[in-house]
Amino acid sequence: MILPVKLIGTLINNKEIVFILGSLASIIGIPLSWYFTRLYYLKSLSNQRKEFLITEKEYREIIKKAVEQKESDSLINNKLLEEQRISDCVERYSATGGGDFLIQMIKTYDDLSDPEKAALWDKVFLRARGRKAKNNPFR
Image (cartoon, rainbow, N blue to C red):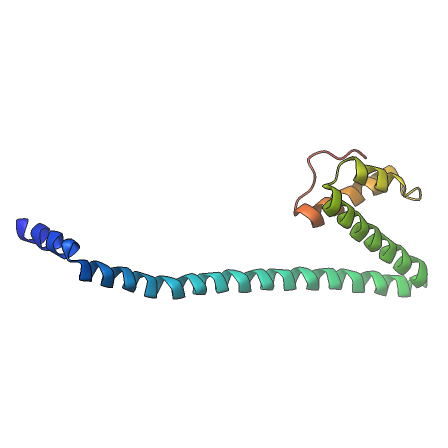
């Protein structure tokens, strides 16, 4: 039992072996770190691709319904206007951090009812933060 302890103590005191073990750890650690980072990156890209395809499918369904109902121009324009408003609000949120500036901006949309403004507020926070806001001033 004492022999292995003395052997380990001797190996630790030997600077060459410590250097070799440290070098070996970095030689193994760097590629492993790169590998796991790459896996996480590819998974993130895959998730973004899936979300984009889901959104694109929703838009195709909206356009298909609009064409079937022969109201294509108004529905498509309303959807494009909604997307433009969301992107404008996300930019305002990024620039100001949300708060009163964003509330005032959404209040300027007079053609929206309060439930539509609340839905817009939620969509802006979902895109800007990745989650809904805790408080919605339009509810």
